[in-house]
Image (cartoon, rainbow, N blue to C red; front, side):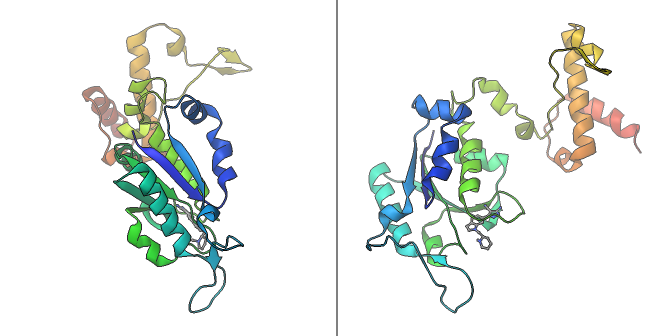
Length: 245
Ligand code: JD8
């Protein structure tokens, strides 16, 4: 299970969400070791300046390299090697469930949160992985760092109650989730599918497989190319595809 160090100029943006929910419980119980580091603590000037104008001109500011190098040196001195330094940016490789699982096997993860126009490019000399959480533009790296922390932490034994559910997760298997229902069985004219009230667990399992496949086929057919389907699922999929084309 990796330790996490998150370097940011907005520690509160990380600390507040980290206090809630499943991650909050894991941190409070000592299962997850997360340290949030204020980049300004690694400046040496009176005004704790972290940014500067871009060489060559142009709009916006760039994060100065020296506070980041000092932060990484301090983290390495404290945690020891090997540090895996993850930088988030729109230029990164797409972050995926497989990537989350891979990172969960490392010893020390550092998440560098950028702001403004990003980092002085020389910081990339110390970066192991540059990832993007998706094709849209954000104002900084704090939300991506939280997304990565959340996805990686779920693989840490004990963080999610049911171990089995993590590896069988929809994205781990390459299928979308089946629909869920809870009481009441009827609300207005909306009814829960009868099979789920039947108590016939073999039938329920088969209905859920079919429903997951229908959803995936309709909404994310791209996932099916790499999906790991058991024999029953392959059978159902063949049948569903027959009815379509
Ligand atoms: C980090 C600064 C702001 C805005 C220059 C780089 C990830 N999928 C994603 N979208 N956006 C980010 C992201 C944006 C960031 C930083 C991540 C640090 N910014 C942008 C426009 C121009 N910068 C991201 N992962």
